[in-house]
Image 1 (cartoon, rainbow, N blue to C red):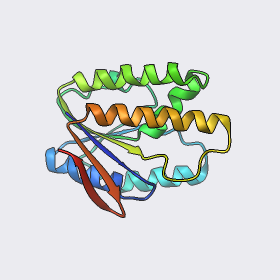
Image 2 (cartoon, one colour; image 1 turned 90 degrees about the vertical axis):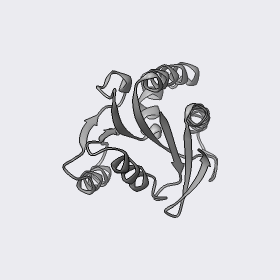
Image 3 (cartoon, rainbow, N blue to C red; image 1 turned 180 degrees about the horizontal axis):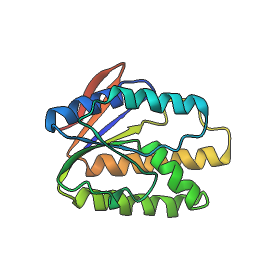
Image 4 (cartoon, rainbow, N blue to C red; image 1 turned 30 degrees about the vertical axis):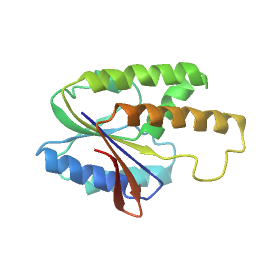
Length: 168
């Protein structure tokens, strides 16, 4: 089962996802899709690590998430935006190729037994990207978000720390 959680930056997505995972399992998995590219981001990742207790298993993986041993588990996948960034770059910024790779991975995850709480940043609520590559990525993420939301059994939109249930 997929539970999709979307929202803006600092909307409470990760906190809500972790609370939900702990309600569903005493030994949840946290899948971090980030690549640490500077000191500030490293500090943010460390803050996330400290928020999780010892009951959490951790996988750090930028691509091929469907190959992780997640079957039968409750896993928080945080987040689609960073996962897509890796795929986008690995596919030479080709939207169609990156989206196809993402769909292959997400379809494989959807077929696994378990609960997968997938977090993504909602896009299209701010300024349009100034660069061509930024606009391409916005398109990619918008289509990927729609794809995951359609697959999900539940979908939640976070606003100011409050969950708005979109699909149950």
